[in-house]
Length: 150
Image (cartoon, rainbow, N blue to C red; front, side):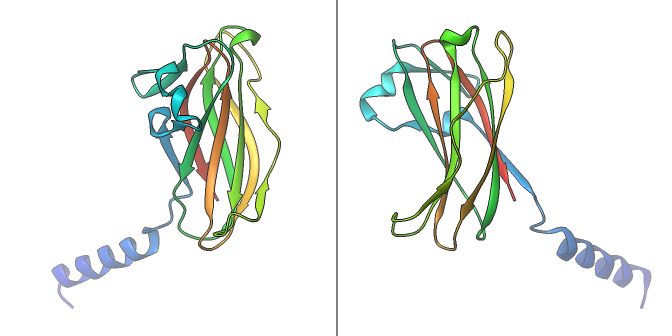
């Protein structure tokens, strides 16, 4: 085997070893949408983040792509200046018939005045099912990004 062939073989081996091994994915909040279409005008976008500008609490939902069934963790980065601007989120999985739901409780921001992470725990997503994160966003609250993985 010449040097060029060995390099190609080594490169193919490395690609096959590491391809598809990503353990986490992230998207900006702008990929989500309000569960109530009438609330779309309540949210303003700024560098991919979404802020609730209406009074009361509005719900954003994020459908999350998955490649296989499993127990997925969820994480949201959000901001609330005070507890009046709180953000609470929940990760959940659904079967293809939307008859079974797996997930935990709604978890709220642990601190205020700076962007903070909300660790949502895990939810099972079956084959041909879906994984989602829903966030309840009070007036002035902001969702920055959403992350998930196995």
